[in-house]
Amino acid sequence: MSKTYATGNTPAPDETDETDEAIETDKADRTGKAEKADETARAAGAQLSTAPAEDREETATGGPGLGLVGWLRWFWRQLTSMRIALLLLLLLSLGAVPGSLVPQTSADEMKVQDFKAAHPALTPIYEKLQFFDVYGSVWFSAIYLLLFVSLIGCIVPRTWQFVGQLRGRPPGAPRRLDRLPAYATWRTGADPEEAREAALALLGKRRFRVHRVGDAVAAEKGYLREAGNLAFHVALIVMLVAFGWGVLFKSEGGKLIIEGDGFSNTLTQYDDFKSGSWFGTDELVPFSFKLDSFTGTYEQGGPQRGTPRTFEAAVTYSEGGADEKRIIRVNEPLKVGDSKVYLIAHGYAPVVTVKDGRGKTVFHGAVPLLPIDNNITSTGAIKVMDGYRDKSGKKQQLGFQAFFVPTFAGAGQGTMFSQFPALDFPVMALTGYHGDLRVDSGLPQNVYQLDKSKMTQFTDASGNKLAQRLLPGETMTLPDGAGSITFEKDIKEWASFQISQQSGNGLALAGALAAIAGLTGSLFIQRRRVWVRAVRGEDGVTVVEMAGLGRSESAKLPEELADLAVALTDQAPPTTEPADAPAEDPAPSGEADK
Image (cartoon, rainbow, N blue to C red):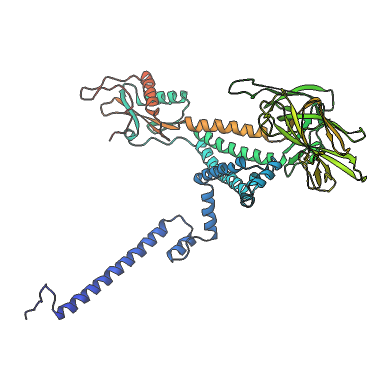
């Protein structure tokens, strides 16, 4: 019976049913085969996997591939990887950036307060991010501790691996030495045993670790590369320990001393004092010193005019015995036991005398003023507790806002400024106040600032506010019988010192030197292996093969192999080559023969 087909070779209705059925059957067969292949692959993967059996079963059944132990193992492997260690080191470096850009409470609390006052919008953000105490912040400590753990996790297994390598021997020679990057071969009249003994002696003399394996000599050199790498990482841990030790056991304080005054290393003598969490004040080194004089000279002309040329403080110090003289300069501190006294700043302390309306001296002394620019334009406050009594008999305290320039400039410009840091033309401007200084309010006060909230500025007979510029020796008279203030001709200088006591510096220095030495070794020492095989050829002549392999890329390996080959041929001279063999000088090919 013939079959009828429609246009386009479309099957007839009965044939279409058979075709569809065949297609469905074929799809089912292919699906079954694919599922069976997947099951076979999973079973094979489970057998080849190095994961624990329970993890393989969970993976095969479609459950979670990692349990708690698996996740902990994965996290530990990630944390102790070199990639994470480098990342943490980078984060530690980046985390220290805010500590150098933003004032730190541990270094200068006054600068922190000034920063907060000048940047009210940024202050809440910086406080939440702990930018004012970076090195004591939670996030910096977390990075520090994670890096510490990561380095230990990297070093311990690598150390055991390195010890195993030191106790082991270089591996035997490959079957095809001519496939190695550096290769040389020659023929010699010496016996194979003599050639191997010569190679053994030569490589041992060149400080290779050598031994014989079958018909070849195996040698290896450059173990100090890995030793340097480990030393570098151990040194990093030492530096981290020294840093943490120094933070916990350090003390640091500042003291401003006027010429002729002294300092004793006790807590009450400091202007400000900070210490580590584990530092006890009884650990302060007992010593004292007096500032005899300060000497400062400055460049007189040129583009560096005003730059300090001499900046030193002459002191007399004692550790409980005889007095000794010392000169403290910038970066040349006075060392007393574990303490160091650094010279960090300098300024002027004009001597003033304040008298009441009856002529009685109620204040006389040098008043240190703080510089506000490089030319030592200075400002400060003079506070007189025993001022005078007004007409009603009420006691009034006196306060003066002082503005001092060592070399006056700005005449006729409405304001004055200093044009040179030396005492060439000193002028002091004073603004007087009377009232309550609030020193007895119980609230801390800055000795260099005047609290004017309860004070009133003096006014002259015309009702103008009283302010006057004084030269040395001049006097400003206060109205209403309040007295006077005299700017004496004697102008003293002051120096500011930082007294630091920090342990762990020697350990940190040793770690830094060890890190440099270890890094140098890991970068410039190349680890390489050399094999020498000597066998008798079919014609009875000994064939010597020498090949080298570097554990890292090194352009000097072929040169070293050539030198070894020349030295070895001097001990086992090559024989004349047969006519059908190419005569070549022994030299490394520099690349594998293909």
